[in-house]
Length: 315
Image (cartoon, rainbow, N blue to C red; front, side, top):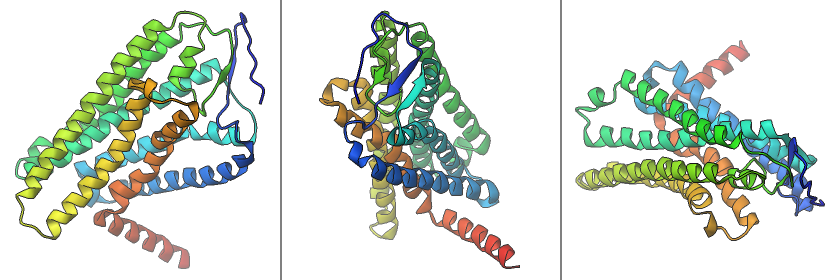
């Protein structure tokens, strides 16, 4: 693909280059990522259906899981359709569409950062303060925190988009990424983008480091509490759960911090795309497995639902 400049001319659309430099793998990538996208949608939808349909799962932990699943569906759906289009043909997106994609994607990414921290805090309260847990994390309090998490994500990125919308773009119009990456998008502006860049950096540091610190603190205290329990199956199960959650959290937060807080650590655009795949595709893919599908209560509810559906079909 030839990359051309449109200097001194206001542009109305961008071309998302994606993985343009390896066209021989495009069809394979299309098949693989389509399958991944379908799995993400189905896996997360199963969790939502299980939580909504079962009264026994109307607890804070499962309410948070259902919200995480819904968020992941929207999160990947904001990015993957354009990525899949890029494997079949040249993927173009209008300037307004780019702003909208960044707003949705960025808001959901921010909300997920906060939601993951809330989930870790919920587990900390449940394990370290089991007698006070119903008071500290009741259903109404949980829903209030969830609503705050969603609203915070959209408010933070709404401010960034409002600043970016004031910029003028006059070329080139190629974004070397499979989605409207903020750094690359703003880097193409003809007007001065420093206010938007500095504001985004400050908000990124705030929205990444504080929730990540809360997660690490929560799990550190959980580990201390678990170590006081006599060695056995309960301790192994708790450590297994903590390590699985931390693996996903570290992947998600680590890649976001590298790309948006310390972008100079990424020395090639191909490496940047790989890191982007980790938090846009891999994390939403693993979330259903790590957080819910290994959970016995969710398993039992899903088996019951599938058994009822199968019985109705046979009848």
